[in-house]
Amino acid sequence: MTKSELIDAVVAANGDITRREAEVVVSTVFSAISEELANGGRVELRGFGSFSVKKRDSRTGRNPKTGESVFVPAKVVPYFKPGKELRERVDQ
Image (tube, rainbow, N blue to C red):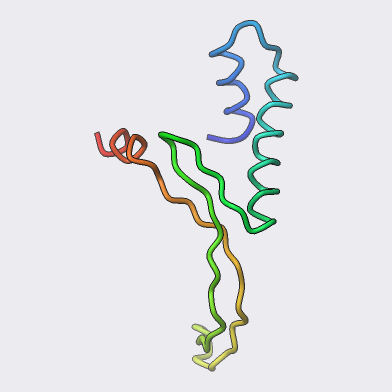
């Protein structure tokens, strides 16, 4: 599902909201999640899952094409952990 398909689904589920209003809502939610993660925070959506950031230490990697050792710097990456309800729905 793409962002525009998600917006269409929001409009279809709520007949009294326009596509433009749904677009603003979806963009605002994504922006709020992104901003919180950028600040090192955590976002928990009950029944869906939680978004957080994980720190990855620097390491020595390997270039798969040449086999040469390469230094990979430390970084912070987004992480999603699905909630129990989501896991059960996907499992069915």
